[in-house]
Length: 200
Length: 250
Image 1 (cartoon, helix red, strand yellow):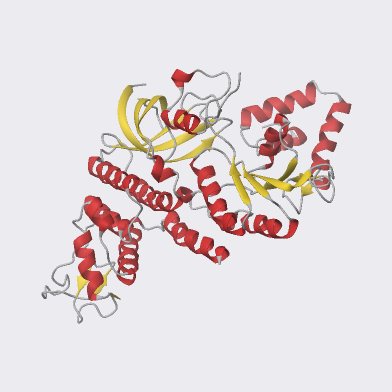
Image 2: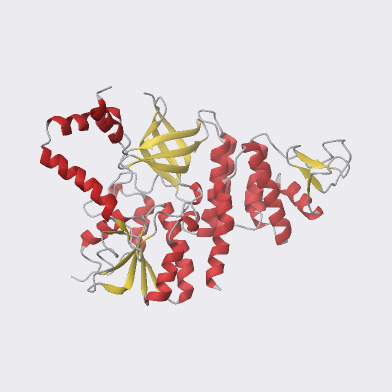
């Protein structure tokens, strides 16, 4: 146990995910002994700023610093294509590819029959409302390629297909740079199913 | 730490730390096993889809104090049809959840394992019939030692057939003994009797009226939940999924 403010900081840090008492203590001592006042102020200001300035985009449910997130407020993006993801970090992963210029929709999780998480706990209804109101022509489902992500994709496709909207699922298969001999049957099977012609 | 090989059905899993996952396994020799699969959430993980729920796998495990560690996995049966069809998946999830709740850690459960495996194999071959889940739950009760007594009245021994089932009493009751008990159709009572000894393939192909199927599933489910002393989350979800879909389609 330490004196007042040091112990307060240790207590607060240890509430963060993956940070136990020892790690919290190490970070607190780092901030106390090896961080300049300017850096400490900047860190404190950044923490306060995300609580004061960052909200949830009412259109796609990504994080937003203004009324809408930076994708929804960018008029150069294709508003007729929506990429459905489970969480905001997935948007960053898709953006890093530089291959997608449409908008996003964050579900806030995935359907998990095994854990009893149903569609009512996700933003599926909001996606349907958007599709009906915004003139969307294609929905790309980019949920994780695991059992929960696949269940979510199947559920959304079942809802959207009758509306006459094109529903696509991101491809799954072998990671670039991996060795074929280490691939499991399910992944390799999907890679074979999704094969395409190449031209030399 | 001891190393051992075991065949298992993956029941479920949950995230651990940055890239790991704890998988819950049903094995014949060690009962329910919880083990960490390190790095499984990374795209280049050597586990790939091998430890996804409902996959039947051969495993190499390190036993640990609380959690084991999976060091090797090979797929025996991927059950792709089950995992890639929403209707089969929701039923299979309910089956896996019930097995998960009933299985005990480090207590051999060969019958529980065989029953779930038979049910998954049946679902892989054919879509779920009306009483597939009820059939599985009835057999599960029998395997776990909670079989429903559906012959003579369990209160006074009067010969059946009866049309009342006492969930807490453990089986069928006559009109006198079962005043407050759950009242079922005679057809449902006969169906439950058939299901209590039917193999999974037989249960899945039974053509029965929807009303009897729903009633039998409800009774079997109440019985299982009574003995587990908790609700099965995935069953509630399976009743929501089709209704939600059809609601929007119309």
